[in-house]
Length: 423
Image (cartoon, rainbow, N blue to C red; front, side):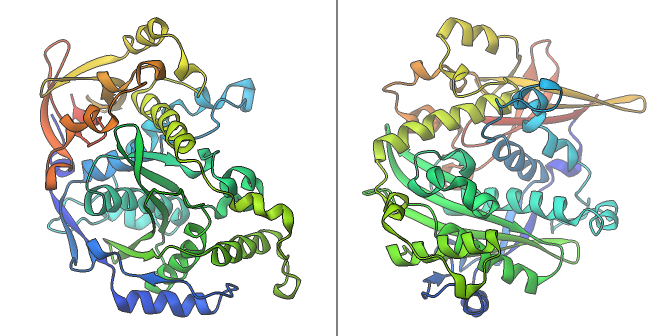
């Protein structure tokens, strides 16, 4: 039985106006950037005041599958365990943590009373997680017109700035890249910085201004349209609201200035001691090869899908031979929905006399070794999950386990699935 309040549609506020842009520009003028930045509303959001028809289950799915795009988890950690083993629940932790976060009141999506009581003591975690969840929903459901791959910026090794200057930029890189494909070529890149706060609109504006600096950093891929968007999640009382601005394509001097400002901020260097770019810095702003970028995106997104399904992988194990990879995949629980088989990891949590059962999974035909992806049309392989608004929204569908138990599941355009049931 699916908890009704998780499946009941609601709405959250959307703000992307010239008034918001003016506030962000004013905040930017107080920062260290020397060049004027082209900040504007997001065209797809300007006519909106609310994002209608979104279920809490969809927001949780967006958060879970996005936070599964974790890089470097093969590195050893505490007790000698590899990061992927220690953080194996990356595809579920965010979902489980926030199952209780939503109020049962509609039409607005609101925080529950319990969430509201603790959010001032856990404000950083709560605001950051909701920032990621809302940013993912805004980008995938309101901005992009097709299913896309999502990659964590920490995993973007091919970018001359993010790849070479990673340690210096630290947490001041953008958060995520969404990539659209036409066949095996990149057709669009969306650089996204996700912000979140429980401290009001003034704090949101300050965060958006910092986010503008961060999305300026990544290199342009010649011949591939790139958008740079900052999304901030805030709260009006307990009601959720998204604030968003877009940054026009920057010239080289603007990007250099943004990187310099971020480096200064990390090193706490006074403005008058600003480091000047020299010959070696040219490497940071070299041309990105579109073919290399497309190949890296494919690898990292495939790792994300395996993570979300509960298969611990690294870039190397994703390249494993077909037989070994298929054997691992068959150990996952199958769930059948609308003619597709989803391979799932399950989590059971006791609730008194009942059991809460959470399943996170990916369509069977998408969890495959990289060697099998060669030459495949990435757009076509995900076309069957394009449902809802303009054919690419979330979809609440009836599902069934291998032993015939009936479920309800939400599927996303990239073939991910979430089911929550009380048994």
